[in-house]
Length: 387
Length: 79
Image 1 (cartoon, rainbow over the protein chains, first blue to last red):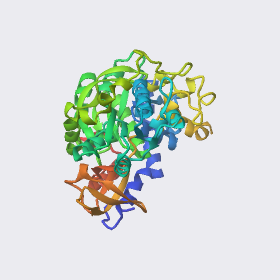
Image 2 (cartoon, rainbow over the protein chains, first blue to last red):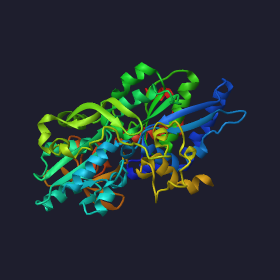
Image 3 (cartoon, rainbow over the protein chains, first blue to last red):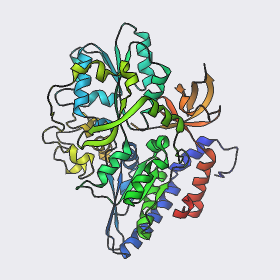
Image 4 (cartoon, rainbow over the protein chains, first blue to last red):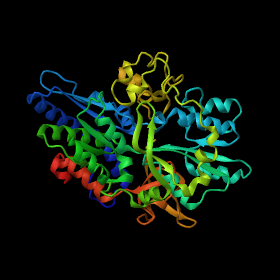
């Protein structure tokens, strides 16, 4: 296709990022660099991504099967899934709090997997089965509509997600929520988590593929401090198969040249300063505080909590008696290895429960529940990967 | 959770904070406040959970593909 042809519909051009020939061309280039790396004495390169949607691309398009698996002439390229699923890292304390708020009579609305994810004792699904008003929404817009259509109900929107998602409630809060609506903010920030991962004793990675849609909001500049401190190859990647393959190639090339860089390989939506309107909305609505991540622990300056001036819509303050009384709650069910999987220390297949006791139909741990959980995605494409 | 899908803006609704967009045949209303300064009818936008989070830069997309196809997209092309 002649790309410069103005008559071509742009959606056709976007489809080119799924082009088989282009993908195979990049795979060939990856293998070429893998041979050069082997010649340099490097036997394996581990690359971590921190985005569930990247894991989806890797699994959906069987990209791992296209990467060099290591032989006498080429080095192994291993893709590691880091903490990229906001539902999986939402602390059990906040889940149990949400369950208690729902039991107290609020209508609790959230995204589907947030409702299914188990806390320490319960989940919102269980609360619903016992009579609480719990509803799945696709968008916060649907939650607002529900609140407007049900003025006699107290409606709480349980809002998880990284920087991609946090501007959505921010913009609606600035617009003004319906009077009967409150927010449970469980938003987390990615760069502070990278900082913890990179110093984690069990981390096994030489490079990062950075999340394209988080970066759409925060911009390339948001990673500069991290990059300057650690000088590891960092590539911001999109989500089509050629986006990911090209990002992997760019990482390998940096390792070969021993020239780490912070590269934006998704410039069609990621700008240096991200989306300034969204960033401004975030800063107007939220304070940055220390935040707990399930399976990881406390990460400094990684949570977005509503500012004091929004305390009248902050359910964490309004219903403070709904917090679980125990100081410590079991984060990960017995036998489950999600704490290791969340940080990429082990693969789902290393967990004794994976696809035995723990399946998408009967999930045990959070990584099997969240639609972007590493276990869930690998389970969904299990058949394809075992071919 | 960060899944975002491209869609084409068909028309603005009400006060311009919302727009009808086309996801390859499926049309839905979305919020466009986060991209209001840049978005036009005919723009492709990235939709995340019912909200447009960025306008997709068409020229950059075409240039990226050209680089990857023709030059192999060496590291230096990204600077």
